[in-house]
Image 1 (cartoon, helix red, strand yellow):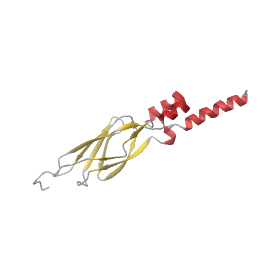
Image 2 (cartoon, one colour):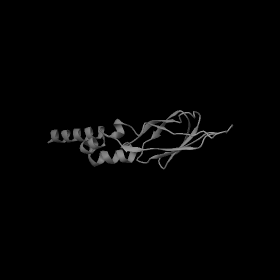
Image 3 (cartoon, one colour):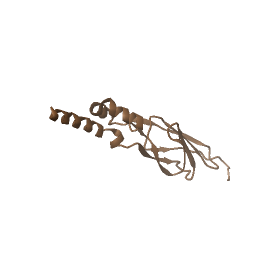
Image 4 (cartoon, helix red, strand yellow):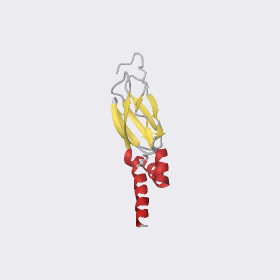
Length: 133
């Protein structure tokens, strides 16, 4: 009977080890760019990350969540640019449900590891004709 318990524990540990929380982490780098308008200030906003400011081009590490991130970029002599960094379901979540069960899926959902942001965003900013800052 003890051997049976050891096998069961091994399955549980294997399932937990397959959690996206462990294999993919709870943060992710995202590249923010404004083609033709380098040096723009972009504010990234969501309920999970709050407000994060970067100057383009930039790579920023963000806490994963199921919430999309709103992006607003500003620069003198350019119209403001807006965009969205979408959040998608991580591909290994289905395997985690099978191997890690409800516990593993719950951990991944709670930590945001079940989600994955788009790897980059390019925000288009249009020059304002005749503007000289």
